[in-house]
Image (cartoon, rainbow, N blue to C red):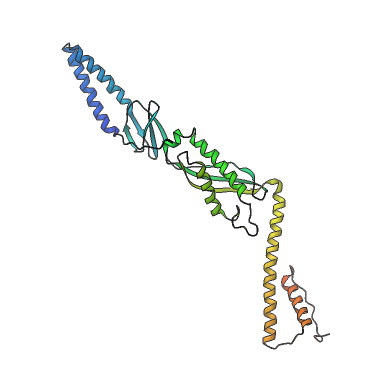
Length: 289
């Protein structure tokens, strides 16, 4: 693999002064040699002036959070990250690579979760280039490579986890966003190890059942919510009945046999667990009539 080699190259402002002095000096020498009819000196000074002119092509501007990848006749020669006006060998091919933080949103994908239910899922990925040599030379188009591999990782993540947790399961797409985001970052980063790219963050932005099963799943979620609420109501009602019986017994308010206790428990549970307000029937006679 080709790894990044950091190069320190001269400041462009210093080279402007050097080349300007050299250019003026060579022009002066050429003029003096021509006047003195020193042909050899004249030709050498003209040739040197041409070389200096070629050196003027070595100037380049490096912007903040940008790198210049240098190649000499197809061979990688290094990368400079120092911003400002710089000068390098004019025969270097100079390719700009942005090292800024970038982000993109994966298109909405339809996949089957671990339970086989079709779902729609999309995510946003935040990434940046950390090795310019790998990004340029190890993959053909690193930006497109990141996008395609991110969508592939997202599709694989969607098939690995369930949409919502079942009994005995700890992690699901809907209920564990932090864990799922960490798993998605790892999944994408594993696929980009050869592209010189690091994934900063990845989070799911859209998650829903596919339209063809959305209504059925909504009814199932509503039923699960009702069952869960009923369990909580019954648990609380049983506790209140138990407390009422204990209070009656401790304070010796009334002595109830097992049959009357069963009737009292039944009535209290009906009152506490009913969806609507109970309409009591008052007994004005004996407790046992």
